[in-house]
Figure 1: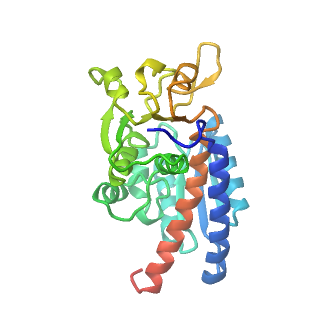
Figure 2: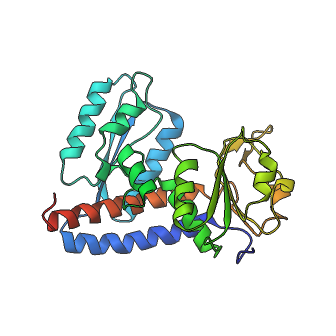
Length: 293
């Protein structure tokens, strides 16, 4: 199985998605009389989170969305943070709610996820949305997995009947991307770092998704010739250089298509967050128009 084009340019695909979203946001705003609203809660000053939230805020404004970043101190209580989430749940101008993780140690991530209304859960991590995904129902899906499926589509890699191996079983990437691949009629193996004969499982894959969080864990001799390789990892190697879960130097000559790190999956996450927010706005507006909410 060979894809059209060797290197899958996540930056270019993300730019296409943002342009598509901007057009749809303009239409939504004209018809609904308001712009989609995305609200982000940032508790504490985690350096990575501060950067991520700033990028999300900028991207939302660029496509015509409105909203606010609610910056809370590291000392915020769980009760106060959950009260803010509940207030946003009740605000009809808010379509998407995102609580930036990690949260301070006194706040339980699971409780935060339970509190966000499923129809505003643009991270797609609420149990209701997880259930919708695995049941084949419409719902909000985690952003990175949706971005992965878009990258595979842009590379023109056929999924129907293909053998896909996902290495990594996290709720954020591994499990939902496996569900999405199944929905596209791929035959999916969900593997992980403790899988017996992991090398052989990887070598079976027409589509290999590496999302285990270990620098350069997958070398070239683990990859089937011509496979589509999606590298979700964001790690630092021994020299401090950013790298993925795949050893790009040895895998790239073998793969039919491959995402680089950086510049592959990473740019897609914010692009798909914007699309999720728009989808939430469209769904909520349609539901109100039909008298269901």
